[in-house]
Every structure is written in C-alpha cells, then in structure tokens.
Length: 237
Ligand code: BEZ
Image 1 (cartoon, rainbow, N blue to C red):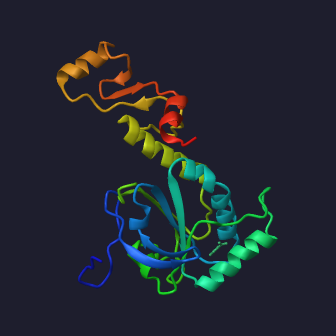
Image 2: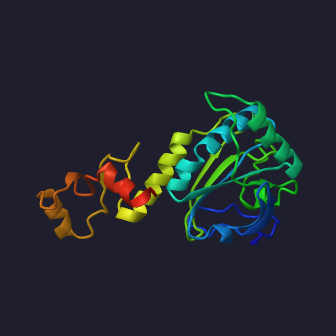
Image 3: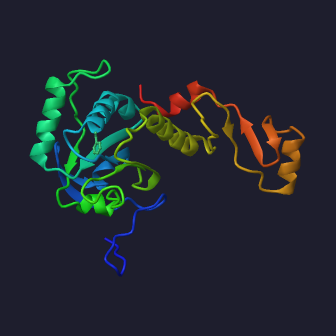
C-alpha cells in the first residue's frame, strides 16, 4: 500500500489499478480485486447499517443485481460495521422492510466488514469533513482488468441515483466496445461521439460530409449507434 510521508494513503484515481485487499464479507472472504478478474465490479461504501438511506440503497442495489450481472458487473458493498451487524441488518431488510414495491429482498452480494476502516481509508471513503467514523457514499467502477474507470462520491444525506449508476456502466462498456465517447445525458440508442479528426485532411473530409457522420464542427462529430447493437454486444442473454 503506497503511503505519503505524513502517513496518509493517497486516494485512488481514475486510471489507477484498484488497490488490493483481503476482507471478511457476508459471503465469505474475498481477495479484491483479484477474485473479480474478467468482470466489471462496482465497489461502493455506505455510512452505516440500520440507517434509512442506506436501507433504501441496499434494497435498490439488490433488486438490480441481476440487471448488473447481465452487463457482466458484480456488486461489492462496504461499511464501517462488523460482520454480525451486517448479517442482522440484511436479515431485517429481508424479513421486515417493504419499500417502493420492493419486499422480501435478499442481498446476495458481499458486504465487507470494515471495523478497522482499513479498506475505507485505502479507497478514500472516509472524508473527515463529512464524518470521521462513517464512510461516505463512494462508488468505484472497476473494469475486468482491475482498473478504476469512474469514481462517484455522494454525502451521507443523499441516496444515489441507480439509473445513473447503470447508465455509467453501460456508457463505459460502450466506449470500450465501439471506440466512441458518449455525450451529455447519453442513453443507449442516442448518437455517440467519434474520436476527433487526427489530421487537417480528416477534418476537411468530415466537414465535407464524406464520412456519413453528423458534424457540428470539425472536432465534434457523432454517428448513429442503435440501441440493439449496444445491447447485443454488452448484455448477456
Ligand atoms: C442513512 O443512511 O440514513 C444515513 C446514514 C448516516 C447519516 C445520515 C443518514
């Protein structure tokens, strides 16, 4: 684990290898990210067990687990609580909580116990201005090669937008699979952005409309990418 001279672990960044750790979880021990090689993983933290925003988030994540799995993505949660608290909370959710049409929800993905805060600190999930004892709502998207591709942070009070988490995953996979970028608010079926012209000749050709692209100017060109093509390549049947 890399350390700065003042003994603070630097926060991982987009493009970094996901820091490795071993942890006890509600699904047994994991060796992260090595156990997840070949899959996308969303590693996310939440502030505490038996709290309402977290409960709504866990129920939503659990009810979308299959949707994420079809996009080759596994889920791993973490909070600064112990294993028995995690087990009791997940049992309580399944047995007692009915929320927005979700009930009898079983959380099958691993929830890391992190009483020591070792993992939370390794991933910059403890942000003392917000809380020095609870993890903020961090989300790390890690690709099948163990590289961090997106990081999102939310404060304690604000539950995450799960449409956005899924949209981000599909946008990352679309960028990889088709060699394109995705514009503001992109959703599958919307036009995608092609890489910028790399020469004056290409810029000229694009502006002359030779490439079957829609060009707003020479550096901003889009093309059609039907939703069916995106899903055909990304979503398991
Ligand atoms: C919650 O999940 O409800 C929560 C947790 C910590 C602080 C505030 C809200």
